[in-house]
Image (cartoon, rainbow, N blue to C red):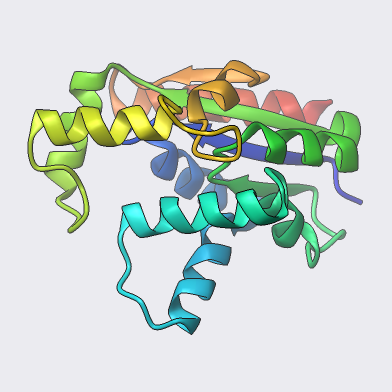
Length: 191
């Protein structure tokens, strides 16, 4: 029986992926990344992979099928024999509403955030191909992800973060950040 479904959202470069990896490593959970649905579709069409292409594809799917579509597709095959299920990469409020409607009080949303300067620095250090190389590129990419100028079905991370049950600020040491994540997960599982 599932005790908790945790949705993860967060601003670009905030440490959401580090939090997800920590939860996977330290708690018995089933993990699903919503963008994997998009990656599978893109790979079927044999397009090159980039953050912009993922964002555009997500916007297109939500435009056609509703803001909840990635959450809907992602939960269809979830196991029910785990205490904890983690759904990573929530970027649209429609996904949150769909998960709340399907899982009620067992659904919790955790947002991860940190100062823009720290996020830009982290993205520069990790050096992924599609990470921004300049401050201006970062601001443009972050603005879109946050929802600025986006339609309701588009990227709306800031609106998602505003709906979170818990927000973890990642502005200290990695150890402090992961201790906060642990505290939240233990609180959720304790009921």
